[in-house]
Length: 208
Image 1 (tube, rainbow, N blue to C red):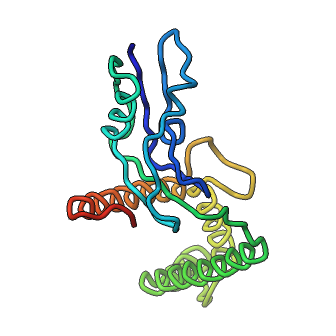
Image 2: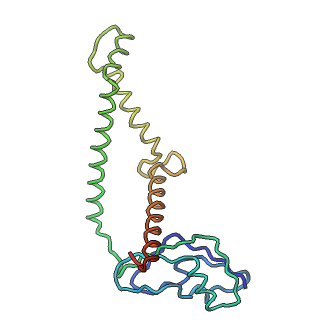
């Protein structure tokens, strides 16, 4: 019997301390039912506390071969799987979530505006606008509105187009730069946790 498994990068288990095959991998068996195989226990949470554990594709293959000794198991997914265990399902506090969003918006607005102002100071943008205005109109004006207003509007539009996301409207279906950075951050974080758990397990530990 040929069994194909596609382990996922990260799984989350809430309350129960038994991890089944279906929790951490997709299973494919040509022409046969996979219900019994998906119910195979691949890991037992050792302690009843929130923690992150590492299981490998080899652990899954061993668990399957223990139940089906004659099966040929092929892995087409991840080699290392992180299992997050939570004692209880965390309920979201919407008021707290809104407060966090507001705080983040304030921090980002202050940081972005400070960065833009510092850039304008370093590049002497007001002086550039004065020179442009003098070239075309022959007058010295500290901050000509005819140039500064279109520039400010263009700056906002440019940022929105670059980040490709404003409310529910998207310029294209491509992932935004923020989504790409978040994906990269999550992958690097998972890789770091896997490396840490690997070192800990080689030294005799198991959870985080």
